[in-house]
Image (cartoon, rainbow, N blue to C red; front, side, top):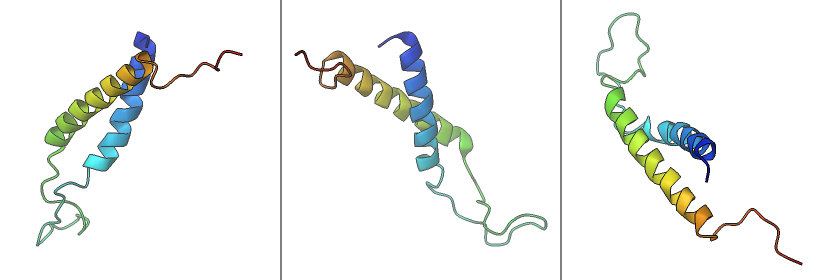
Length: 80
């Protein structure tokens, strides 16, 4: 896996994992301040979610790299 492929794999997996992690622990506040949507989370904890997303995306990228380099997954056609 080239550096470019690893960066693209990391970026795609990062965004996918971010949207899976965003709802974790999102609780709306009991009394939202005026001008705030009632469903907005009271404490979104975005930095923690970004850190978790980055760690998980790195692990997913590493697993994909291992799978591709060990020929467990091959993108080449079989020999005739």
